[in-house]
Image (tube, rainbow, N blue to C red; front, side, top):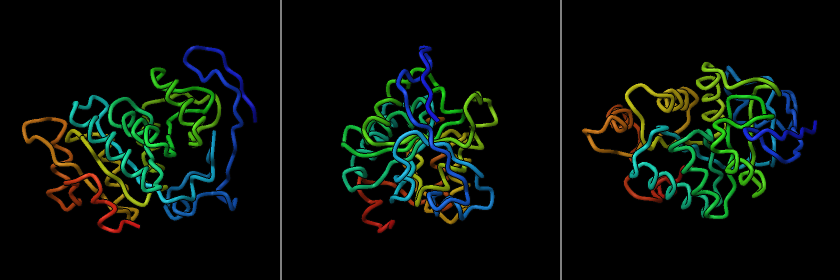
Length: 230
């Protein structure tokens, strides 16, 4: 399928949208293991990345400067180790994770909550184009025309967890989508890492809680690698 959209909120380049059924060999093995796997994945860009070693970096949309710096630096360093960075193309932590990966010359996968004929938020349209043009991918379980409805976001979190060997939560409030993603990762048998933060910050209550209940602590840039994640 080929699509060309010219609206400001859409990608202004013609891309192939690949459709991968859960019965296809191209369907990612890790995702096939989860009980609520999507029946179909729609992919723009490099679908082969779905079979590479990857780690997800997620967190608050209204992140602090600290969270932004940590997210970007972690993504940069992991990308230098030839690890694919997975995130959700949302504002905040997700954005900086994708940016850090691209700065390192790495490949990143953005999992979105809408059809691939649009990009939400529109502020990340240029970032989406860079992701694909640099050899990355944007994926969704929603067909063309499906809007970014509120319940799509927690649904897409299972894909972020499902295609990744592990997940890092950089900043998260006590009740947030990032914690949903972390809980799903635990359910799927993935490793969960959390970045400790200021005990007085709302954005750190979720991550500090994860550490309290047993998430592995990120205390330096490369300790995910040191812990032999793969």
